[in-house]
Image 1 (cartoon, rainbow, N blue to C red):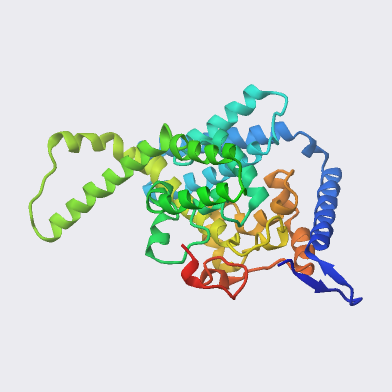
Image 2: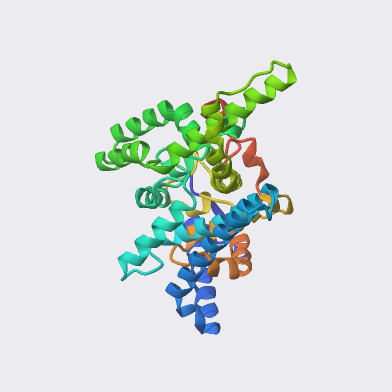
Length: 365
């Protein structure tokens, strides 16, 4: 399945060779950029500063909202932007890019980026899942991307589960379980890996995520009933005990739940469509991702820190911080485009993220 393209000298160039060319150029750009800007050697300090400032800004927004100095419409994008930075930090921490020799601070940062993005899975459990994603990206056991709807047909079910990983797990749990068992039987994964997938499923969303999703469902249910009651003049009133709970539910939804769901929708929409799935050659980085950086993706890119423009770079060179990747993206994009990496392949939406056109859409689940 590996693509073989011709260069200007009519020689056959394989995807593996193209990958090496891209990696060499990106690594060179990183080295030159760090040499030009010596302050970047203080990687731990930079990472912790981003961590501390992001959390401080989220708290500041919450305080202003609770003091009625800003509205929810301002708070929502404010928290979403700062938590998108925390997501990038978590990703770097998963790859051990900060405080390698100081586990206390590293784990403190891991806890912090989780607490302020509490509807995500346990980052310590996600680490193995993410490393597995890099090894098998786009294949049946790539649970990290499949959990955020990669490979599904675009329909109402995919739309409502893009940011709702709990509902997505419930609706697609049987399918994913069957695929894991099939991969285990075929020898594609070990029993230890299958057990880890099971552990993530049962423990990954404790203690924060499940509680907050239940609060969110209760919030939606309550106000939906009220809305319907008002339309049909049913004169429905919740019991006093229920109404009292909204003294803490409403602020929690405004400060943490709604901004994180909004951010997660933006991130998961981008990542699930920039990754390919199902018909890629295992280990072929050229087929794993594309670059999504068209202007009409900007509204979502703002709230996932330009993930669509830079994450494909990470698949070629994993050991660099997110901010360096952002600052050197133009040079990386140039060589990636020259070597045949796809840019803005919008057809992925109708192909259920398959790499090739020739597949049966009915196979997408």
